[in-house]
Structures are given as C-alpha cells and as structure tokens.
Image (cartoon, rainbow, N blue to C red; front, side, top):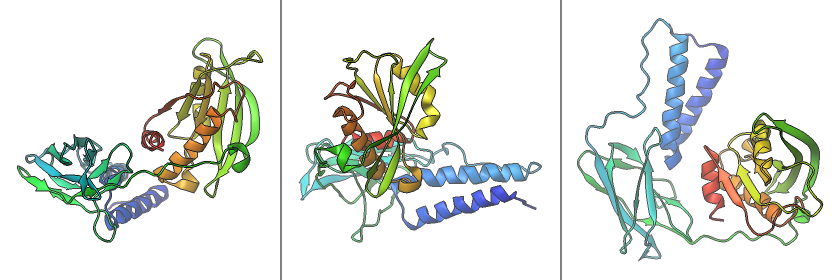
Length: 309
C-alpha cells in the first residue's frame, strides 16, 4: 500500500494542483512544469515505497521518429523577418528557428508530442500561439510529418516610461548597512546597503548594493547588476567577491510571494532597480550610463525580458 508522510502528501497535493492548472490552460511553461511535477511525484513515490520498483519518466524519452513545425510570424498581416520561434520539450530542451524574408519558419527534428509555439522579435513582445479567445493553443507534432501551425501574430513593444525622480516616486529607502567578507578571493570584503522601494502594488525589499570598503570620496566604479534566481541574501558571499574586484555590485531577487512566476512583473521590478542604480540614486560611487547585467537559472527568463524593456 502506498503511504505518504504528511509533508509528502501536502507536496503531492500542491503538485497536482499545478498539474491541473497547467492542464486547464496549456502554455509554453506548462511543457516543462508538467514534466518537473511528474518527476517530483515519482521521487516521493519511490521514497514511500522503497521495496517496490517505481520507474520515473526518462529525462528525454526516446522518440519514435521526429517531426517538424512550420508556419508564419506576422504583424498586421505583414511578415516579421528574423523572428525567433521556439518550442520546448518537457525536460526543457528547446527547438528554435528564425523566420525568413516571407516571415516563414520551420523547426525540424522535434520529438513527437504536444507543444505551444512562442515567437519573439526585436521591437515586439513575445507571443504564444492562441485561439480567438486568447487561450494558448497546442500543436501536435507527429513522426515524419511537417505540421502547419496557425500564424503567430506579434505586437510592437511599448517602452516602459518611468518618472524622472525615481527615488521619490517609488519611495526608495535604505533599510540596513553592514560589512561582510567572503572566503574567496583572499581578504574579500564589502560594504552592503539594503534598499526597498514600492512599485506596482508591492514593496520590493530585495535590492542590495555592495561596494568595496574604504573607497575614496570621489571614486566612481563600473556597475555590475545581478538578477539572482533565489533570495538575494543567500548569495552574499558571491556578491561580496564580485564587489571586492572594484565594481559597484547591485543585486536584486524576485518577489516570489507578491509576483509568483510573473516574469513580466519581476522584470519591471528589476528595471526600476537598474534605472535607479544607473541614475546614481543608490550611491554617488556608481558610474552613470552603463551597466553589465547578469542572471542565471530562473532569472535568465527575467533577464531576457529586462533587456527588452
């Protein structure tokens, strides 16, 4: 008999809620979320039934033969040239193609299954294939066939406009200041300043500035801006190590409670933080005008959107 501990039962229920939600509304993310959830449930089942042989879904199921997806990317009926179109396998493996002069794309070597195509191009917002009701639409890839997808329709990006005095408009406040060290490189240390600001109905309290210690009064440092995938303070030693190399290191992490998996919301938060840093609102020691922006793991999606704001 399958017996789940209480914490496993709670996690399993939450996982199945995710599965039900993604099943109700297919999306590009659901391709991957559904796979991850099924893997987690399988691992809990293995832990609860150590004497039973429980096989989890393979990382990448052996295809029965691959297929292809073809279609057009348009705006107001005209072709969008050099747009990227992507579909993702359940384990996350992407398949990508670009549109030609006619707006046509063809993605080859896709394993059989159901996918939600997504397109993006410079100057346009990304768009998923959807029906007349605005619901994302699945396409079924079959072996040795080229599936014709309905056209993907893009709309021009609308630049985000921000007020001139960001610190006042978004109630920027410094909440703490302390010094920290890191084991590598040798003698790495930094001054850490914690900030918070209000934006889009939430209090963003995950903004941090790391500066090398004992700076000259007129020192101006290049800006390195990091969007961390998890809580910003868990990465303090990494941030300290960066700052010890003579940069102004500004870091932010997603507001997972307030924003959930709202990539757009996280990117907008990061954009406000970046603009305040570049504009000298966080410190007079930051060089104005330029920044190197980094991200990784979950924050790669946020970074991708941030760079197009």
